[in-house]
Length: 258
Image 1 (cartoon, rainbow, N blue to C red):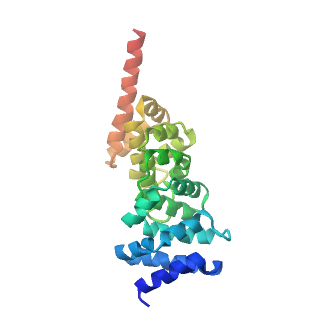
Image 2: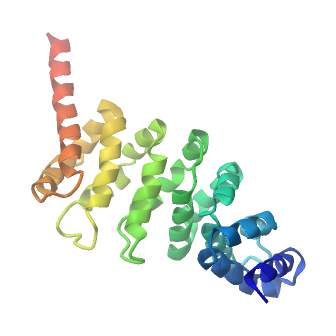
Image 3: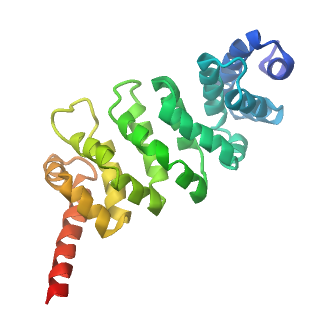
């Protein structure tokens, strides 16, 4: 049986097969989507495979974390297809569930959910609705495994932080900001400093004077200056944004007093 012939059989198993077959079926679809190329992914989407995978993810029966993870991995594989990406990006309910998985899932589910988010283009309202998962993504920046976890968390955060209200909300989360600044220090050697720096730069660049002041008060300036001396990408610019904004606010305050 060719890959093309196997796709409708697998989709039919998801639609009407026994629950005992769902996990192995999602694994097969995941493998086909990852390794089969754009045409295979498009065939799965057009054949209804994405729709049935979403049904498993959103309302799995029986409740099985393993099945959820396999379905999510298959959806991630399909999300590289423009057709699947467009469908998923237009589904607010999917992003609500994605946010819940990032907040409450196992480490592997959190990573896969963040990876899916990186492939999609949700609108600003959807990004606002995902603000509660930003603290979990900050924690993911500290993950050692898999190797791409820190980069994935950074990319997902930068997507959400493109919305001003999310930047303001994160900078008011003292625990997350403290965690982020500590990542810049030499004691956390396992962290690629470029990723937390990119998040701080996003906060400093578009969060307003209040955001920059809070970052400075959390100790970001001194940590960024040391990284800038070590030529860590983005550190010098982030330091200039935060320290420059702080000086500007100081002069502005003195001017108002006069």
